[in-house]
Amino acid sequence: MDHAIEVHPWDLAEEGTERALAQVAALGVQRISLTAAYPGGRLLRPRAAAEKLYFPERSVVYYRPDKARWADSPLGPRGAELVLVEDYFDTLPIRARREGMTVEARFVLLPYTPPVAPVVLRRGEPAPIGGRAPHEKLYARNAFGDDLVGYLCPSREEVRAYVVRLVDEITRYDVSSVSIEACGFPAYRVAGIPGAAVLDGCAAAEFLLGVCFCDACRARAEAEGIETSPLAWHVRNFVGRMLSGEPGDCPDIDEGPEALADIDGQLPEYVRLRCQTVGSMVSDVRAALRAEVRLVAAAGSRYPAAGAWREGCDVERLAEGADEVRLNDGAPDAEALLGDLAVAHERAGQKAAVSVRLRPGPPWATTYEAFAERVSVARNLGAEGVTFAGYGELALAHLKWIPRVTGA
Image: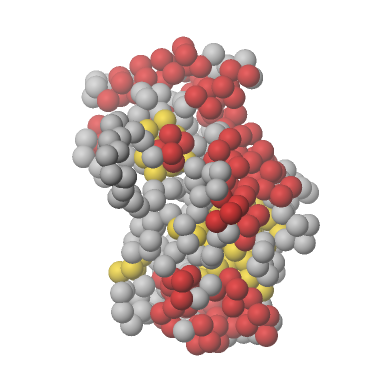
């Protein structure tokens, strides 16, 4: 079984490439999954000497993009400030191979909120009124017409072309594989924001509040015979009733989207169509890559394999394009992981390998024994490999668990 670990470029900048590489090699992994694109946010780095609470730049890439390739794109990538000092995709693969390891390029793709650049006007030029940045027109949009700010819609051709071109561009470097995460529809969560408590206990309403009904999604559905205008009305009506606070029946979507037929008979089909949309984009990415570069697609970001349809990331569809489908670390215990892997193997069939991403330490593996059991389950169920999450985000005690399970 293959072992890999995720490493961010800022981890290398913090520790120094040689020191970090020596520590990673001692873990007994065969591959470094190096971040190529990341949406931003904040990270806690327990072992960092400085900036323990780290705020990555928003929606940048961690290599030096070829500007000429992006002249006609509304989503052209911007290189992070870190790559002005060193492009780790240029320097790390050579050093990694000396240690018997290869480098994977890891893309966290469709969450996209670039920093707002100031508008510089020529003398005498009027300021734009009511204008929108090009990328803002590509955000997902729910049935109420609300933009899901920060989430690009994979139904839009501009977004699909951006993903394919971005992933293809990284193969200028010496990478053995490319992994793509967050390549589906947003797993929109309202929990914790003001006013969201009214939806507690109705996962279907929260899910539908984030289902995209943009022009591109509607056009794809209409081409399949789905009437989207009455469908969107029924969704608005149902969610509106849940938001009213009055008692009402809420479909149970834990077993799949079929229960949504109580809201509109075509709603399960509309939701399932999203899996076809994402799956075809993954196939487009595979077609653009060189044959020797392996493509890994993550089956969603929040849900186990059986629930990845919520993000349009059904394992069966992903397996039609990807060489490997990677499950996220969302199973709360070894038994749940066993079931998750079994479902994934069944749905992937012989079309693609199945691997899993696991995190040593909390929340799911608070003891070494619990972590080792999860790795053992993956190994015994025939997982292609295990990718350990977050080199820079692991406490030292938990980092030390990895060589124990790899046999280093």
